[in-house]
Image (tube, rainbow, N blue to C red; front, side, top):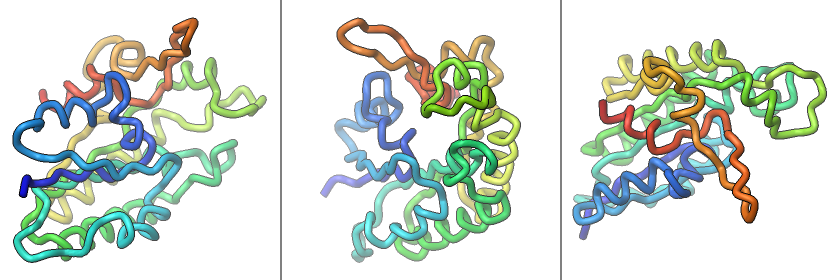
Length: 212
């Protein structure tokens, strides 16, 4: 039986098998050695992830622990509570405790599995104002890079506290000039192929920062 790598997260994970997606890149990288299994749920935050964790993973079986599980939440948790995506907001202390609970569940489920936390990515606020996801007319972004950074720090703190690995995607991406245009996914709008930035979805270049 080939080992498995589970990708557990929100829409950034759910859509990671699209063109230029980081999940597709991982599947390609491990094509002869492991199966990359998608467990991504668009719109989810850590509060909702806790409610479905027993349903989305198979029961533990002796000797069948996955090779690794990525846990990639925080972009929705960090939505500002007084803006149009406020229903997705999770207070930062609850976010931290939810991550701790998810890690504890995975450790109990599969003691030998490597757990990898990934921080929320940075936010291109100008891009979100140009291409809003709703009919919000406030002229204000419903997510900010500052808020995403605060949640990223808590994610890293949880990794250190729980003794698991982490990728500081929020910090790493911003080390590269032009990250807003070069490291966030471009979405094709067929048949015109008009390119619209998703403003926090990670493309191939963003994936490559994982490896640096």
